[in-house]
Structure formats: C-alpha cells, structure tokens
Image (cartoon, rainbow, N blue to C red):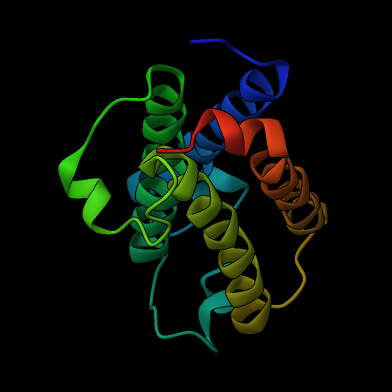
Length: 150
C-alpha cells in the first residue's frame, strides 16, 4: 500500500485531536465539578441539561478521544471492521475514511452545542472549530479518497 503524505497528515490530525481530548474529557470525568480544569464553574451548565460535567466529559472522552485515536490507527492499517461497516454510509469508501468525516462533524457539533449551552468561553472553541476544517479537507483530497476506495 502506497502511503501518501496527506494520509499521514489525516492520521496525525485525528491522533492529535484524540490526545487533546484525553486531558479535557479525562479531567471532567475525574472531577465533574470542573476543578481540574482551572475551576470551571458549574454555573456554566445552568442552561444545559447537565448538573455537572460528568456526562459531557464521558461524551468528550469517547467521541473526541477514543474514536479519533481508534480511527487514526485503523486508517494506517486499513483494518476491516464489519460492525463499523454497518454504519458506513459511503459504501464505495473504506469505513475508516467515512469515520474520519464523522469525527470532523462530531467536533463541529460538539463546539456548536457547547457555544449554545455555555456561550463563548475562550480560544479553544475557535481553535477546534478551525481545526475541523483541515481535518475535513485532508480527508476529501482526491488522492486520499483514492487510497480509501473500496
């Protein structure tokens, strides 16, 4: 299998996203009060359906930590996965490529929902919104798409 530079970039973007969510998601799970993240006030969640940061931390950890690392690893090896194939809506593409697109949109949705419920809280929201752009564009590059065609 010919490895493209863009292929490495896509994997790196996913792995970096996953590694970044270790701290945020892990800290919210360990300390649902928000104290581990510089004392996030629980009042931030007043307009949300959550009374503490545990559920958001679990969602962050699973969807933006575990999933990107798993998909990044699987992209490298083009691992088969019948369960993941079941949710692959792009039948002409390998499931790992499709899931990299899913993760990109999950990141955008996460940030937008965060903004809706707690408002603008800092530069990380802008960073991760902008981060989703190269993640999507690299996955959509013709040579990357060609590499992941079924």
